[in-house]
Image (cartoon, rainbow, N blue to C red; front, side, top):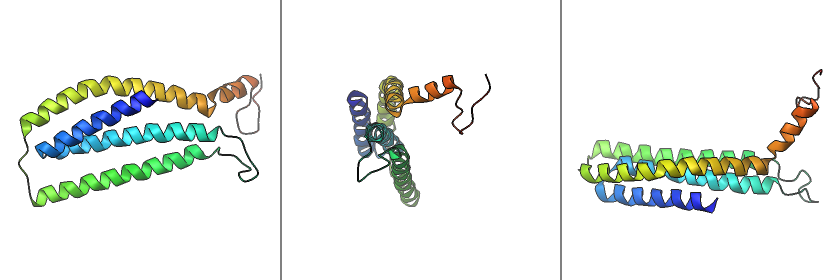
Length: 156
């Protein structure tokens, strides 16, 4: 899980630096998007780990709701990035800047080629890890036993 996270952050850094150099809000916005992807991956991994921790005297229910808190935190982070991009876009409308179009095209093309394969791989690895940590096998076991999760069982 570290490699997909590091690669996503690396691509985000390259895009942010190139976007700043080229005055490209598009590249900086995409870098913000990739930053939220990396944050989501890290937060989900942490939540999957935390939710597997057992209950204690202090936390009698355990940490089973960690995934919900993680989703909420990730949503707030995304909204913050969106607000920052919107703020910058409004500033650009008020005072337009010259953008180095050739640099934007070159960076976007190379980053997109590399990022596509990284995101597919990271998404697959992240999904497998989160599903394993979240206990999808428990749902499969319930389904095999006829439990629908609502306290009722289906007729066999």
